[in-house]
Length: 308
Image (cartoon, rainbow, N blue to C red; front, side, top):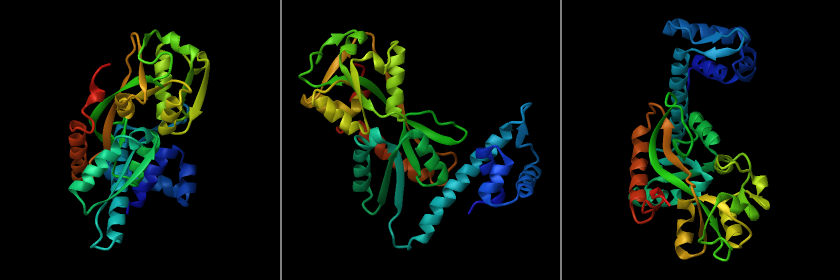
């Protein structure tokens, strides 16, 4: 259970407003002020300050305390779940991952982990990076696998693998296996995941880097999951930009073909992330070891780390 004063501080860090914090915690505004003053007195440092526009900000020491309190709060939630379970119940590992990796690569990692530790239980949550970071802070998951920046003051991370994006199509598509200029793709339908996803943001970065937009294409289809995107491409409905590791097996089997684009390169680093200074770091590193072994094994072959 997190100390009430630290909980007040964390809520104030989110709202940046004393009145909103009081409302959310169902306490009075003077109580919020008292809690913050107590923490500043205890640590003998200023935690927050107002700028000239009366906007509330964290000091450097405030940021440090926030990171500490977030980890304490997250670990407390995990400990609470473990203590409420019967002593003879197996440990449950809760992890999060992007939908892209959750539907392709991470199940291999979970399977190998359970082969090695058959007494364990695993819960895997799929979502977008920002939502997974929030779940980490709330203690709903112990770690996650994502491809976005994680502030080192709040999170511990390890580089897992580098993923390259490729343009794919059906083997029956006119551009299958060909090398083309980027603008030649505009004559065809583009298929991609829905807005507000990391996959969509990655696509926008690729297109904008080549002075392109989705409206430059003949038409487009916006779909919910990466598996549905692949199926639509295999039906020869259009083309898509997808991480190589997601489609490697289909490229190898001939179910999909690659369109080679001149002067094109796009890659992202996937990271293994958990809360800074978490009590559960040894357990997280145990799963990380399995991840690295799977990536080095025949399941993955590190093919995705190779340039096109």
